[in-house]
Image (cartoon, helix red, strand yellow):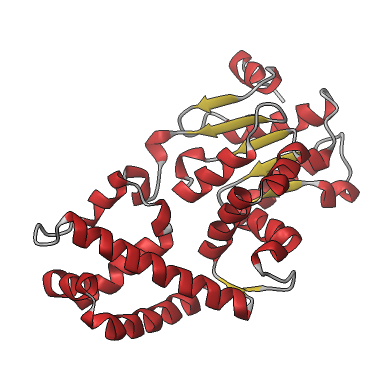
Length: 278
């Protein structure tokens, strides 16, 4: 494979690094070659290399590229930690989730079923909460449909980690002052906790829950976090511009310069989701 000098430098240079380049410049190739170089030249065991891709399809493609090199056999496929962040979170929670009340055989909702269930629960909460100033004031100023939309957004974003900057994305009317906004956020946070605890009790999670509970696992259990940090010597992230705030938090927690290196590739001009703007 013919590589440019810049690509070789990115692949071979030790230490954490960010590669920012435009589409079609071989970012994923560099990521794959960095993975192989860490194993073949720097003698890092395959199980100590962790690579995140944006989609399952990209994970399969990267895994195929690694295995199709002349240096690895297909028998080594189970040792490869190449996946989406959701898949990584699911594996992590099956291994350590008992500290959060999860069994290793928990199931994951499909997205459509989960959204329908959340809407039903929001409707029940709205009816119960009509006497609460935060809910009643929001419905008065913004309408019931926007209540559902906003609550779904805040739950998806994990409301306890919504920043002041992200709150401006709500574009709330001036009639809702800061105290009312804070009361509303607390109401949604309490509701989110009810949903999480209900799902833990029934051992059924959504894809967003996988990230939320992984964040809690890494934040509230430092010994588990330290073990995971020491487990991986190299953390590689493809399409870094498209990670969500929660995924950024997880990667930031996993990265500890004493134990591992972080290698990211991306192009800010190609970000997809609206939260990248908030």
